[in-house]
Amino acid sequence: MKAKEIRSMSDEERAKTLEDMRMELLRERGVVAMGGTTSNTMRIRELRKSIARILSVEREVKQR
Image (cartoon, rainbow, N blue to C red; front, top):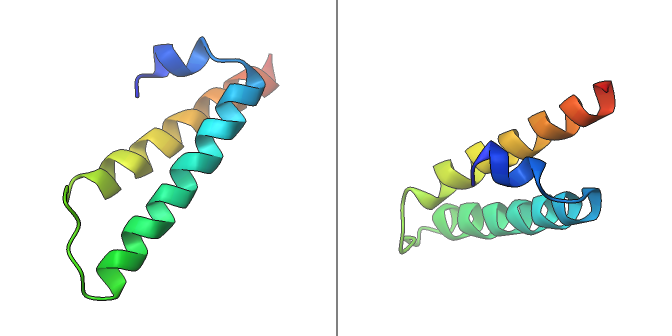
């Protein structure tokens, strides 16, 4: 997810997306911790980066 897309979202949409991504990351990490394999190994990295982008945009909005 690009920062431009995140900036175009409303506050509620960003919060919902952030919550969904955190839950998905938790599930993916759980699968790996239990010894399973994920269908897409890069998904964990993508989720972490997207979460960081959302949090960065939220900080930008709060500073304005």
